[in-house]
Image (tube, rainbow, N blue to C red):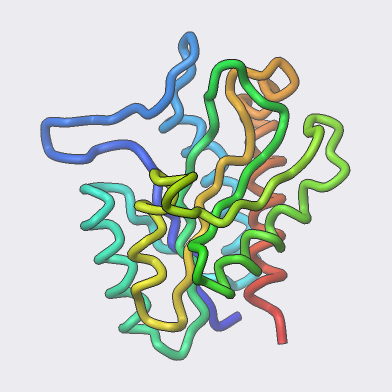
Amino acid sequence: MNSIVILNRGHGQKTPDRFDPGATYGTLREVDLVDLYFEAMQADLGTAGVKVRLVYAGSYRKRNARAKFIAAKNSDMRIVHCYGHVNSNNPPGQYGAYFYHPKSRLGKLAAETIAAEFEGWPEFDRVRVFSADYNKWRNPYNVLRESYDAPPNLCGVLLEPYFIQHPKHLEFTTSDGARRVGSAIAAGLIRFLDRP
């Protein structure tokens, strides 16, 4: 498969002396939970022949610049930049959410294709796909902004597959649960990248 998925852990080492764990709940840290489902994604994507690039360190601006460099260097390939997160709003919801840049047709299709893999899961009352409108979803918009102002073979999706505080989602914080989540996201990406 002539494609690349860039995995960008939303939190982590922002500067040499600043580590951002993301959201926390008890002993759970968002950065670790993203690592768990990214591991499953990386394994399944690799088995399908999709190249995976990890962009973990530095500010969002630096990570986006790296992603755009990868896309420009591989202009003949389809590339998706995945920003990994989990949700932790209080009170927690019972849904998964996938964001795309409001002007990105490919980003929307990628988000919808990923979200479809979770339809019917008993842990979710619904699966939501959001256009990251600046006035309503300013943080997702700012994250995805530079994935739209990029080479045309690149699109971005911000992943928030579950809530770490919801009792029905605690399973996803385990290795086996993260494997389910990561494999579902990878399956959606493979379908998106393998489209005609």
